[in-house]
Image (cartoon, rainbow, N blue to C red):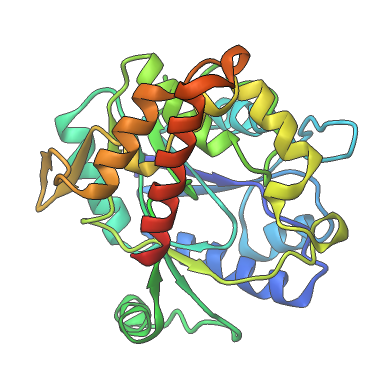
Length: 301
């Protein structure tokens, strides 16, 4: 059977026991999406070769890295594109569980649009055991989400679905650091590519983890590599969010997102946001106030 979707990811090293556990859970969920999906693992992180061999998944190498050894998003996408023949590609973070509703949403969207970038909010949940992928696994996961899951605010994205002809030129962002996911949404706006929010149609599950795998155990947005990503993206004006999607996929149809205070605050923030060279004065001051109000509102929700 020909493949519809090439799903690719650049996992972290498998040395941390909890990261090892949740990444294996994620990979197994992808492999249970059906014959129309192929999975590629990109990179040379410790333990990745053994995991790829164990699950029978192609490992794509060599991936280009920055001077600190962090893989570059541009190289990850390039390697996956070269290896793929599928019309659709999906980059997913290696701690994300996907359910079959993702494949159905991709089919529905592909039937309606030739160009798009699809993103989704995620459900955060604590997972501390190896998941059971026997019959009924998706129903069990959905039940767990209903009991213990928390819907993450519409900020960055852990999943990008797009036609393989899109995003052929990506800056050398460091993967796993802040900023590059926001740039993907911003670049879509700049290139006239509709940004589609899949949240009403899919259940994207993020397995909680700490930051012990990062330098100093710091959250990724505190790292110098994240600041470099921000600079490569073009500054704060390029920090777009799921909140900036053009349409939502709901009940099989593309619809305008419902109006909300959150979206209003975001529109005002964008309208007032000055260029990087003009980060002072009343526009910058006011844009920051709207940004703070938006972020506070997202935390409340």
